Length: 106
Image: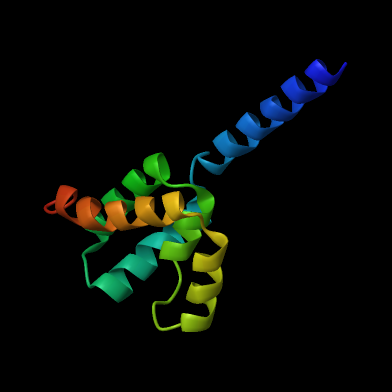
């Protein structure tokens, strides 16, 4: 019985983590692109490309973190405290690579 409980809990954990990487909905994508354009001074096409990469590589919390106003230090700090070291590293890696991958996107 305990074995089945453990199997069920692991299954729920896998399902919930894969849901975090589920497709970005249109309002979330629009917010991400708008924040990218405003904060990073990039064209819409480049920001849309970056949103596509974020959708495939980041979880919902990391995407929400990147969609925050960078001058809103209170919310940024609160988000970063909720994130694991792995999530913070994935955001850092994303910010180092995605803008360059999307240069010239149309």
